[in-house]
Amino acid sequence: MPRRIDAEARSAAIAEASLRVLEREGLSGLSVRGVAAEAGIAAASLRRAFATQHALREFCLQLIEDRVTARIAALELTGRALVDGLLLQLLPLDKERRLELVAQVQLGVLSLTDSALRPAAIRLSEGVDRVCHVALQLLAEAGQFNPGRDPDYEAQRLRALLDGIAMHGLWSGELPEAGPMLRVLSRHLDELTGP
Image (cartoon, rainbow, N blue to C red; front, side, top):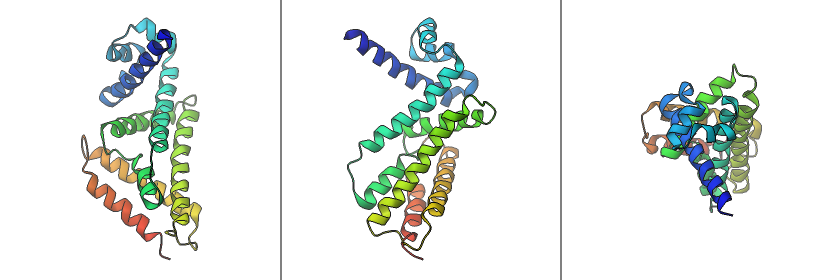
């Protein structure tokens, strides 16, 4: 049993180190050697877990998805508060979410030219699409979504808005002010009740 705990602790350290390296140094720094140094473990130990850079990159994308999924699963909200809570998991409102978004953007851009990485990047993007669809379903269940609106179109529009708000937040500095992002998102959701 202690061996498993050590393996879990090592995986967590590698995960955090990978995202920190991506945030600080970009893709050029995301190497087995760089991540091992950041995590404080031997490079040989990391190479046993990730034989290639591709495996490490895929791991980072899966890690982001797992972390967001865990935060969403932990939400104990209902109605509009749940909708807001779901969508806020996708914005860079704290260090953890900013770190994830920086890594996602960098690996997503790489996946445009790295066909082996593309499926993992697409899975992560499709997860964001699902969150947008679920958010609109929850609004509809709460009577806060006009049934005359096209839910597929509105999910695409919500996704575009979230992506824009998130990127603007990244460009705003280390930790952007949450107020403006939240106001834009909240106003958009409020408007979905109308024609």
